[in-house]
Image: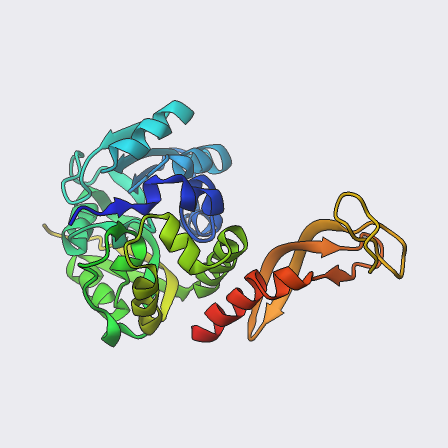
Length: 241
Length: 67
């Protein structure tokens, strides 16, 4: 089934703005505070979308960043808005040399990727030893209810809710040490409030995105009890590929 | 509240000031949320019209109770 990518359309953008995620740049800034940024650091935004995060980091934190995204649609719009180093690439095949970046961001993008383990492995490869990775994304508080969404025809992060225990194990297997895992589910609840105030109801929102079963999708998501997290991780100094 | 103001249709009955849209911190269950609602610029009293109370606000309550 061909899925409609919700993140490429104007329906969600009307609510989230150009960040396309819960909380806007709040968790980006939180990540930058933990990074202790200084001149010369080079970062990568994996799943950079409209490039708004890279632009924000450059302007507010004065750091050099590049970005990759698989969406030609979003990259075309990003290039019309910003003058940034953006590449069209799959996150599990990053077009960069080993040990190239001091930090990487994956903000509400890992959940959209087909093979998150391969992406984590690839992100680790392009990070320098000791470099830091910040992931913010959706998770299931009831992971036992996670199930396939094959019959749903929209592509959204909520199809890729993480089981945090599995994700933590995947990070470690990729050679990443978790420094901090913090819950930010209130950002997801605020996004829901914003969506309802904008579109009247969640059903109306999902319907406008082109979802073929708004009520069914909502019911499935509800059972999982979605939350939002940020993980701060570091590539081990002695990591060997 | 009285319904005389031309822009919003409402003025504050206590202060006689036209109410205007503004950011409000709304509390529900254990959460605090930012929403835009009509409020008096002087006494800060908030007006929730019936259609909003039975529409979006009720919908938000249902969604939050589900979580």
